[in-house]
Length: 453
Image (tube, rainbow, N blue to C red):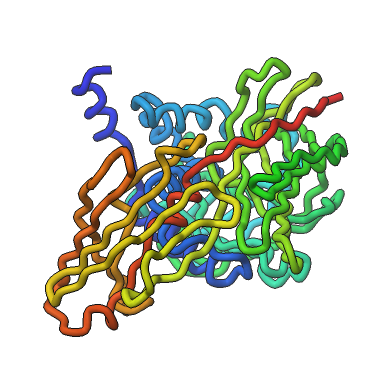
């Protein structure tokens, strides 16, 4: 693809800015409500870029086909977006097989009628197809609806979700799709889905539904196969396979040290080791998280939408990312200061800190050159300076990083202060990029063999 063609594709990509900003805001609010372990505060580069792509594409309420089509043509990025053109969502297969249940519920407010025309419950996925009439003339970025699922339902306490559903016109009719992964350990045969839309097409209101739906015939295979890695003190158990009519789901459990969450991505391989699907996103649902005195346990569910795995022998290849929390470091901390997780081989050492009223100079080293695993360098993001542990405006001072010795992996970070300070060492704190680098470093575990009967 020529540079000119690439630029044209890029310029033609429709990005709903207002809707995207609202989605991010709602995601932040949801994160505050849910009683889950927080990720590191500043995940950069790989985590942010793929995470954002996942939030746009893996959630069926935010699929933008023209966006995915254009991005699939872009070198490198195309490798990430292309699976969504092939895989899409569970609802695609259900629609093709005409397996959705007719519902025909209508709710009206402010002159806008929202109708649930059908619904489906496949494997561990539920979905609702909506239409809208009485729609005002609004800009493209306002053609969405804000909805809440399972609000007030005690069965789903702590997992309620507030999301956006995108509407688009098909043959003159405004249509929207909501798709959601159930986070129950034991799935029911039938379920009622309470859902409330609180804003559609920029109009606030109340469009409430209580949708009954029966689960489509599904096959569940229990495995209980465990692979262990004593070096990383982590084990992954493939619990079971859920085979629906339009999706394949894997339930698995990860056990890791108490102080560190082990985040696992799965790659589906055939018996010869050839890749079929790579779960490069972080969209896998956390069904349950618990901590004991010694370990962290996470039960997860990976859903491959619009894909029913054929009978045969396969491998699941887990890739481990260690998620740990680090605290801001006072500039008065005794040196050298060493950062290393209990299980990850990456080490960072701060060897010196020099302060003046105008700047802070930090020298540090890493052992990434000697590691057997690939460590994403991102030297520019290795260090940040904070005024106080939690600056009111959330601002960070970024350094100018120079390489002192590439072979020895030693660096110097120079921070220019916004204004002179006579109390630099007492006012400022360092936040290293150690946890960001660790979580962005994928560690391959032993593949898990399984058979689909």
